[in-house]
Every structure is written in C-alpha cells, then in structure tokens.
Image 1: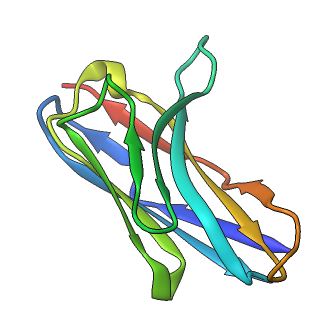
Image 2: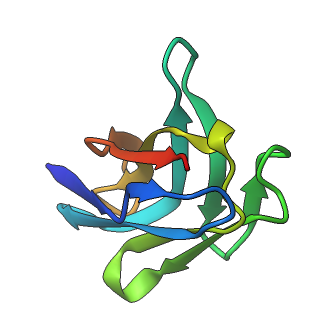
Image 3: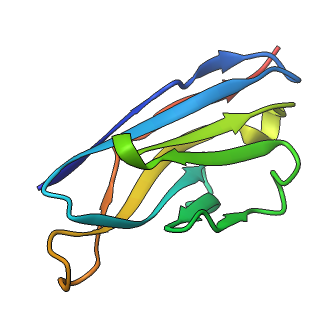
Length: 121
C-alpha cells in the first residue's frame, strides 16, 4: 500500500503564490514519476505538471512560466510552486505517483485525496 499526503492548498488573491507538497509513503521500491493534476467544477481532471525519474518535467501550457514542479527523491516528495495565480487556477489539485514495489515489478499508480486551491479577491 502506498499513500500520498498532500498539503499547501488554500485561498489566495490573484497574483499570489502557493506551494503544494505531496509525500509518498508505504511499499515503494522506486518512483517513476510524480505529478499534479487539477479538476475545476464542471470540468475534467487535467494534467498540470509531472516530473519523471531523472528530473524530466512536463508542464501544461496554461501554467508554463508560472508553476514549477520539483522533487525531493530522498523524501519521496513532490512540490508544486504556483506563482502569479489566476482565478482560473481555482480547482482541486491532486497528486499522483507512478511507482514500483519491486525492482522489476509493474508500474502502479495512486492518487492523493486532493487539496483545494481557490484564487479569489
């Protein structure tokens, strides 16, 4: 069993910043990727940013230049630094990890419980 614990969401004014954290724990041999997704009311869940082993990142065009994803491998933790926040960034942000429980095992996936981000004046 692998658990993801997210933190850092909240209410912020437009132009402000927030930093989300997601820590993975449990039966982890290695992590292939960790990422952030978001889901706004009435919309489908979408990828925000992902960071793969080796540090390769993919950032959604809608947040490129404003959001930065980083990872602490020793702590199995991923961060999402969100700057210049806009009202359209309002959503529930979910952490996801792709991991293996053994060296040659299947890649498994799990989600966090989500953390609410509200950008409003």
